[in-house]
Image (cartoon, rainbow, N blue to C red; front, side):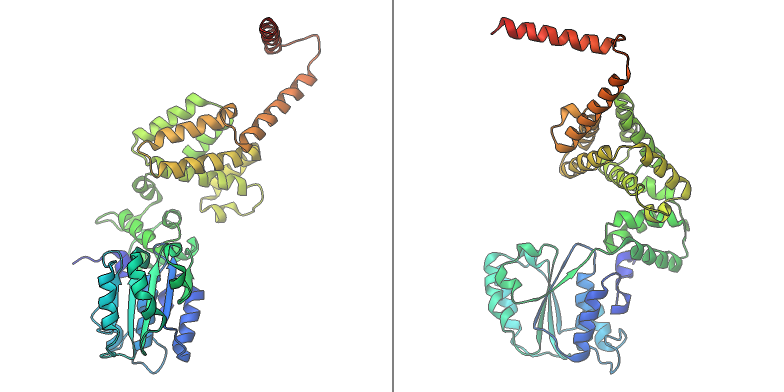
Length: 412
């Protein structure tokens, strides 16, 4: 039976873990010295290795090797890897969250290990336990029997009671850097015999958002069936992203206040079946690149793009006002947050770009800065003109002021 890539390449030893060196160092030392705590809390975002680290730690505590532990090859390590070891019990708190389930656990901890050095209880998604279940677990977690270790894993530690948090050794798993994810994807592609473009792997790593599992899932989608080549264009198409040219074009129209052009481009993106939320994220990242272009060298390395595209971004960044870049990042980020839960993300994007091009519609600080900047530019242009040559716009504004004052005087 076919095995998904994220399962096939799940780490089996500490050395195979990606991007959690601070966690690995602590756990290795505790296995080596035997100073193992009675309860651990592994917390961090999805796909950062919490459950894998818990299994590897359980292997290390029960490994039969006399050298580096876990060895990954002894009978106990193999049994734990395949989920058949009696003394390592994995519990999904999402489906076993009632107080009755915890009472059963409290009864089982009384029995000594059957085959290993210690019994290890791995409770995944522990924040899903009910309040009564947490209360039932509390005493056992504080003073478990000898040779019993609890490992709690969660993506939302803030949902755990303080009484549980205070009884665990907390280890925070960080998002994995894109460079390390990209190196992992390279190794997987080389092992699978898949040729790849560096830019394709960089795009997948960026969309993995710090999660190795998500990145491997995206890679699995992007490797065409029966093909042995991974191109950036394929990744762009599958992810529903827009190319760099579209982002550059949209940004230019934004600077020129070409509202019809921007709205038509959004219409074309939507008609092509692109993911609007993904496009918003890509555009935010593009504005981040424009900001970085003001201060950084070797942009092709920072931006994960070709030298040609990096030069285009630099040139566009030099033409843009920093206030507009800042306003675009804030406005598009707000649109992205709302679009995650909306059935009409396109409308939110259209509203965001109209606000950016018409600052009078927005009342936030960045919009006010844009309006003041615009007024200063108009004032400077007006100062350079001859007093006798009054412009048509100035005449209209003057006439409007007179009419407005007359209306006010009539009603006073």
